[in-house]
Amino acid sequence: MPYEYEIPAVNGKPLVEIPKELKDKVIDYTVLRDKIIIKASDLVDQLLYEPRVKIKDELGRIVSRITEYSYPPVASAIVCKDEDYVYAYRPANNWKGYILIDKGEAGVEDAKVIKKVFEIGGKIILMPATYKLYS
Image 1: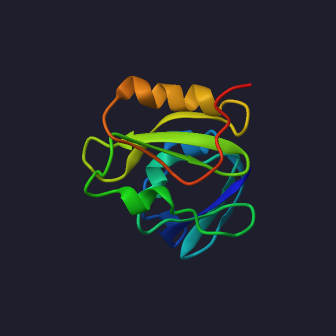
Image 2 (image 1 turned 90 degrees about the vertical axis):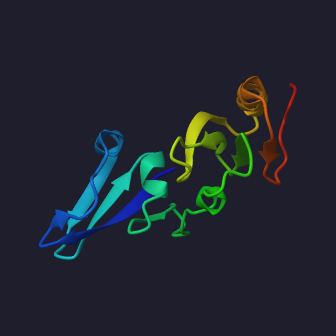
């Protein structure tokens, strides 16, 4: 699932550091005077929590669901799911956002991802979705 990152810029130079992880996933990019638009093959966690960066999925929807749980931490881990993937996140060390624990194919690897979360322990939030826990 491709994602579009809109990174603020001045005269074509980014105002936000572009992580190496994003550079490795670039499909296409456009440099404009006031912003850089990058199309990438996957979501890069670090930029989810940068308020100046807009991230859109392939349907043009703003990606922000995980950042709603950024401070204070409400759980040891959060599991959520979209059409393609199931994700598990844990609080970042600085309490600003969450860090990806595991990611798997939706409907195929749900149980594997959820098992990783239970290995961490503590309070776990499963976002509303249908999870396949056995085959």
